[in-house]
Length: 193
Image 1 (tube, rainbow, N blue to C red):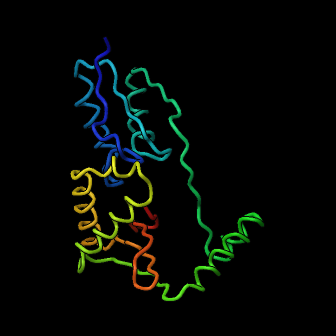
Image 2: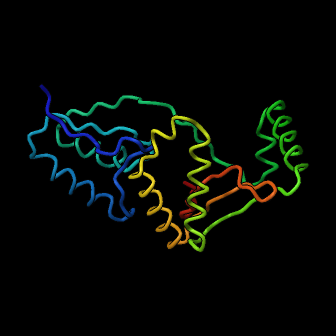
Image 3: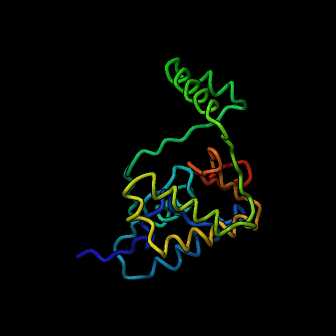
């Protein structure tokens, strides 16, 4: 029987060590120094984005210390570098996708009372999170299995902290005053999460 250690969180899109850029080497060395003497035979690190701290720093550290490292593709996650302008984005779409997007935008613009809301503070926190969770759960049945009370509390805490730091962009699309769609983005540095 193989004894091992595995991330505890298994419901995130990506997992990684969280560190300030200037502390990455020290964080990886500290984790490595803690893990190395333990009686585990396997350290299972998964859901790692290509540019993760673990892939760029921790794995090379383990390999340099004569540990066997095996990387396997787990899944494909689409990412795109966005162009500078909306028009540049549209021109990058193929003709049928561009046509379909413009058609849907015209249809939406024809709806009475269409509004986009961007929430970046916690002034109406309870209402905003209630709407976010309602729309989240309405989007797919499997989301109700994912969104336990513990995860909802985690999201609320995270959104509150991100708002305090000025990183929150909670988007709502409303039609005739009713919120019908949502998206949450954390705007940190030059990256949207």
